[in-house]
Amino acid sequence: MRTARHRVRASAGLAALLAVLLAVPGGEQPIAPTGRAATVAAPDADGAAAAAPATTDAGPPPTPPPPRSFTLVATGDVLLHSTLWDQAGEDAAASGTGEFDFRPLLAGVAPLVGAADLAICHLETPVAPAGGPYASYPSFSVPPDIVPALADTGFDACTTASNHTYDRGADGVDRTLEALDAGGIRHAGSARTSEEAATITMVPVGDAEVALLSYTYGFNGIPPPGGQVWRSNPIDEARILADAARARREGADVVVAALHWGDEYRHDPNDQQRALGPALVRSPDVDLLLGHHAHVPQPIEPVGGDWVVYGMGNMVAHHGTSDPANEEGLLVRFTFTEARTRWVITEAEYAPLLVAKSPPPIRLLDVAATLSDGGVDPARRDRLQVAWDRTTEVAGALGGHEHGLTPIAAP
Figure 1 (cartoon, one colour):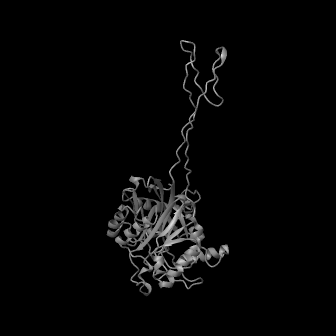
Figure 2 (cartoon, rainbow, N blue to C red):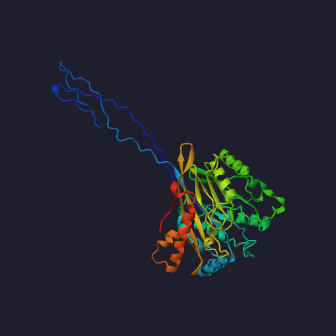
Figure 3 (cartoon, helix red, strand yellow):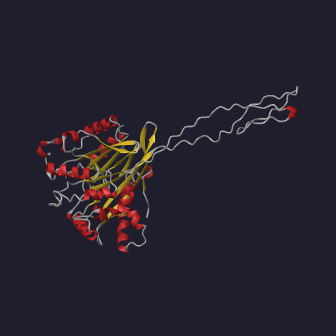
């Protein structure tokens, strides 16, 4: 994890000065002590020098330190279809790094992710044992090589509650969390034991403690493995608010809730999203809501001083559907700043993303950064421009731009 910016708190005191005037015979002027400034006394009517107050040059007052702050970056679904691990296999063969190398696929977002103080992804699917077997839609079991690639890209934590959490039963849950642990990536949303399920995930970011909560609308009709209902977290307003309040009591300075929800391939938030999202961030305990699952970008809405990101679309996926919008996603970046007794969001930003499928190889691109490259193929440039136009329109559809939401960079 990159360390948040630290500020040195400085204090300065002023020492009182004692002015000493030396009376010199013969009418000579008194001499100020070395290193001090003294006011010369004028003689009074009897010829005696009248005492004058001494002055001191203390210099300008100390500059107060700037408030402490940190940046949080988040992305949408990491949803690996077989075409993506085929690409990772080709990249591994080219680099000689093993069976799969997902790092080239993700490299386009590494500068933004790596520069953040805290970077959060959403790992939607369970990972398979090393060597497989692997499976794509509808019941996923993906190469575990994705996890070290996420770590190398700069991610610090992943949420794991999704409609695919139970695709491979308890073993799939356990393998996924063990892989994240081995990669040094914190996680929230599923659990190996009831004790782990009851533990709030706290991520230190410099001097701040960030609580990460994760919930899903459902599990595709798959029951909890072995009846262990604590294995993952369904969306429940009372439960989320209770968890957030407990996170505060346990020392969280910032509480981030991630919800897997919404209607697939729909840019507009559904009724559940529009009702629950603002209600959660209006509570005193939830500072930011991150949404995913719709596989297309959804709006980013200001609610008071907090924000609801209804849906970030995909970070990486390769759907069989022909809708080009599911190739597009959002990376969001929020700056949290310490203000008296709590941390508040002082800057809200986003970057449109594109999973570029053709010409090969398949790559995840930062749209603005790629458009700024003068050497981009004209056909790809046109596709990037469509992604930019559509994603910026959707992101600001609920008034975000009018309340300070800005693209991280413009092409």
